[in-house]
Image (spheres, rainbow, N blue to C red):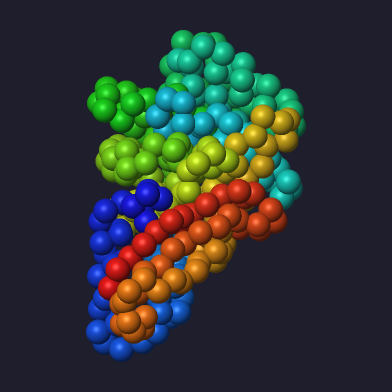
Length: 307
């Protein structure tokens, strides 16, 4: 579990729960460990946490934030495609006015996906873009307003305050907004994702995480570590599979596929008897090509716990 980015705190907690369950008689056999761990991890995400919050009336505003290079703009495109496929009217707000060609990139995505976009010239005040986008969303009766923001290091306080300013602008223009604040995380960065989630949550009301770059060696177990330490309402709200095609995709990260993505197998430790009293286990495998996180995703891999 440590190798799969769950983090030492979440790993220690799960190991302690296994030991406690064994002592209390809840676990008696080796083969009961894996189902027990599945049940415990699934319990981290209550049923209501899987739903994307929407406004009771008017446009639903989704603010997207993250550090440089985490995959925000592409993730925004995936989210737009997901919503537009459901028949929702979507407007994009190009509030990343700092990065070179960021506005042009989002404009290209809006044209491919057939959604509207509100933008200013590069170097403009991102708060002004957010203001105009909110007015446009209300006037055009859009269902969703997706606000893309510039990448910023969580260690730069002045940049984090600028992000908070964008949130305040949205709050003043549309009551109750932003309804969702999605933090895009590069799933390959390991435990640094926990620090990013903590700092961003101090400046904006982060409600969910968007995992990007899961098509490589990353397993996505970091969401368990974040959920264990930070009270984010939906740590698994959205999971993304990066793509370079003209039709990006995203799928809701449900609780069961999160566990099904790894095939869990139990193996008795050598030289230890009986196996029901002391056992090790490994979590190996990949997600199926249909369902789960995405093709090739590995949530837990080569994990061994000793009783």
